[in-house]
Length: 123
Image 1 (cartoon, rainbow, N blue to C red):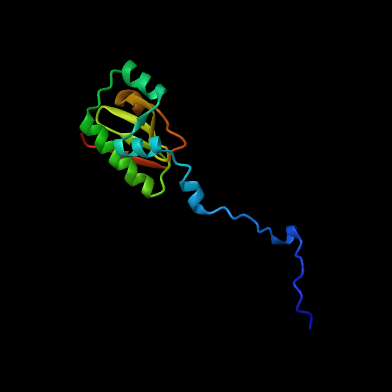
Image 2: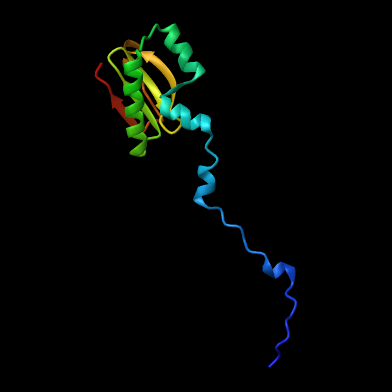
C-alpha cells in the first residue's frame, strides 16, 4: 500500500459552473423594482397616443390598472388588453408597460392580436 501523496493535475480539479436561478434575479435593476412598485410604465408611443386621442386617465384609475396587470401577470398573462369605459390599452404585463392606447370608438373596429388576456375595468 502506497501512502505517498500524489500530485493531481490542475485540470482535474476544475468543476463546471452551474448557473442558478438566483443569478437571474440579481440582474433585475433597482429601477425596474421601483417602477413596479410605483405603477405602470408608459411607452413613448402610448404616451403620444394618449395625448393625440385626448384620453384622460386619473391616478386612481392608473393604480387600479396596475393592480389588475400585476394579478394578470401572476396568472401567466404576458400581453393584455385593458378595456375601460373611455379607452382600450395594450399592456405588456411581463414588463409592466403600456404599449399603446386608443379611445373606445376606435377600439370597437379593431382586431387585437398577440394578447393572451383581457382585463375589463369599470370606471
